[in-house]
Length: 113
Length: 111
Image (cartoon, rainbow over all chains, first blue to last red):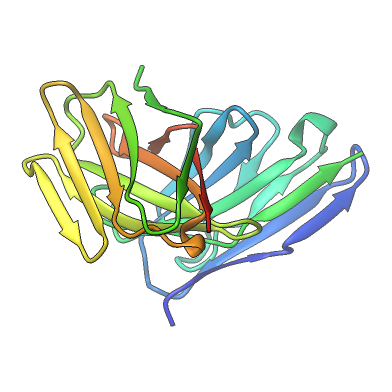
């Protein structure tokens, strides 16, 4: 089954404690990206990756890092989380930037206290 | 920059048709999308329309695109309680590297 898998689904952490949210896709997609969803703001792109070892900033990259060492994985790293990073995070993948479909993961609800 | 606007709420009765409207700003968008988000779930791609089309029908879903007015609509025929969800309109940004989402329309279906 084609899917994008994120882990964990829920996470509560404390300010400053480094964390990683994993994302994996099984469709051999080249393009992957991370979004955050906040009430009243909709979804905003954090980072994206066009292919292995190619990443770039989206609209709201501050406080986040990503890596793309393998095609299937695109982890989101918060080196020093802060309460304003409390949000619902989605990973997405598609076969290309002009692709007709984008598959989204189930989301990771992160709370930073 | 690019922007996508949607009304925030729509309430309909079961069996009626629902129409969710969206306006967008980027006339160069090649694809426009509709996503559905159920409570606690991720985003599900419902349908999409290519910019050279005026209409696309897929079972109970009909997408209408008015490029002149930059207006996109999603019609759900015979709306069911299971259609209750948040619906997002989205377009690709000019660089093609991001989806620009509206804030979502919450559809409430009463029986």
